[in-house]
Length: 328
Image (spheres, rainbow, N blue to C red):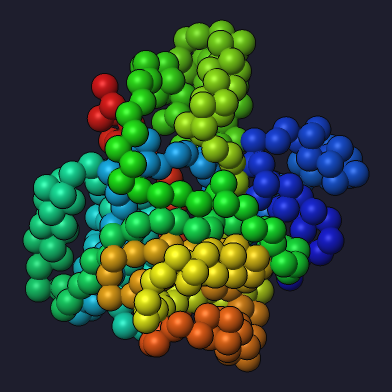
């Protein structure tokens, strides 16, 4: 379990993972030495598993598709090969092992329906006889992605500006330098400006100005971290909700409820068999049951639901490098 000091540091990094050691120390009222050592330890213990740059996804793709697969596990070696294949796939930006209806889930970033179809075909061909069944869901809107509630356990504030809508077909123009900066930060949001300047052979001032401009244009929308939920004392669940009628009133109710519930870290509306998919973190099965009852009480429009246990995240990045390169 986390002590107060670690919670303060993690919360600062959730809100902005590019904060310097000095800035975190000032915000948390700790010394730089304590902050530096604690972050090192959180990384070593793999409580913090990555540093993420929030990139405005609809600017780089037409949509995102969730693919859930039920596998026949012939042996552990083959299963490990499948996980590694999914991890390395250029168009996949998120991959997780799950326990329940399916064994693995991942999201595919695509530009055209043909692009998506080709990727699904490549994956199903690779899985071959190991693929028992699969389900595809297309993202429509993303209502929430925020882990702060895991630390504060307090009701979050509703913010309509955080809602992401796909299929906007908005075009952007980035030069090679901007793309290289985004690619670098996409892999590790804490990469220092001086490191980027050396890598790209440009001045640190140019890097700083470029990043500031990308933020101003809302191409980069923020910076956060990925965490191991189990080491925070949580069990992670993926819940699929089937809503009877997705009216404007129902959608607004879902937006508000999911954003303000601290234990819901992610929510998206999809075109699949479930209208809504949410990721929930609970302290134990009793706590999960209370959360599930609360969801059903606050959203009486739910006519059916299913849930699975999230086991291990293998990949988490907003935009794969290939999709950034495709802008040229």
